[in-house]
Amino acid sequence: MKKIYKVGVVGLGVVGQRLISAFQKNEDIQIAAVCDYNESLAKETAMECGDISYFSDYKELLQLKEIDFVYVAVPPAVHYDVVMSAFQHQKHVLCEKPLANSEEEAEAMLRAAEESGLVHAMHFPLVYEKAFATIEEHIRKDSFGKIKRITLKMHFDQWPRPWQQTNWISSKKQGGFIREISPHYLQMILHFFGPVKEVKSYVDYPSNPELCEQAVIAMLTLENGVRVLIDGLAGQAENEEIAFTIHGENQSLSLLNWRKVKLANKGEEWTVIKDSELVNPKGSLVEHFVKKLNNEQAFLVGFKEGLQVQRVLEQLIR
Image 1 (spheres, helix red, strand yellow):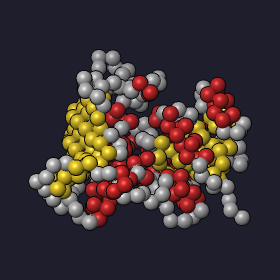
Image 2 (cartoon, one colour):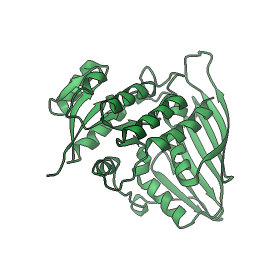
Image 3 (cartoon, helix red, strand yellow):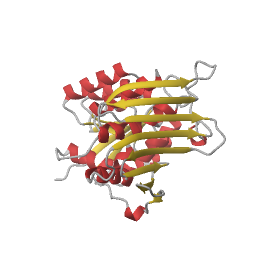
Image 4 (tube, one colour):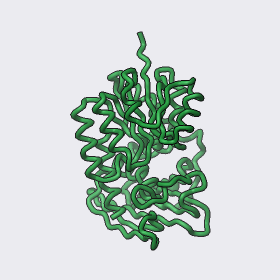
């Protein structure tokens, strides 16, 4: 008989709600309980999910024996406590990025994950998008030739953005666009091009010591010699733009604002690639997580890779 995996969702903000929708579309998963410190939001979400159990304390949710895995979508400073407790209760874990709020926490979480023998994965949505699959295909075909440089531009006319008005996203402790945005692209850099050898970072903070960064200029040197330039800025006049660009000797590729892909062959102008011409991904995060739960081969970003991202992230912030 086919097993239905029951999930407990901890954290019901914008991102948490997105994964709830993904869980609901998968016939192998049933949302069994939800949790948020905002009890009214937890109750409302529970009703929308079919009048399921709801909690304002994740420790109570973890007491439910029927829950197979926990999706952790709370702010970064709370990841460690929820994840470690989930492993102690023998629950598999799907965690938001970044993995933790420090390198030390991330190391402890990886140790606990490996010692538990439980499934552990992170939600890096770009990994399951057409852009990621397209970059992977171009690398496989050696379309870029020698990689000359990689650049990441993160410019925001407003930070936090209008839909991110929470009490932590603008804090120096756990917020800011370096923590929120760069992990997506650091994961791709590490996955496609290998480890980072050196980080030089210059961060501008406001006069209020409680608030997150306003700008960053950084250079990463990879072990293969390729250099990555990072240009982050908040509060400028122009509209938000996030651009991840691989500059190759024969071909360059740019991923704009998460999904728009442009290509340029040597000596030619940039050309936008139609969505229908992009490479289709090999399934969704939820599909691959279920495969892993079923002891099948799956494509997941585990805590080990999450720790590698965390180490670079902490060097950028420092």
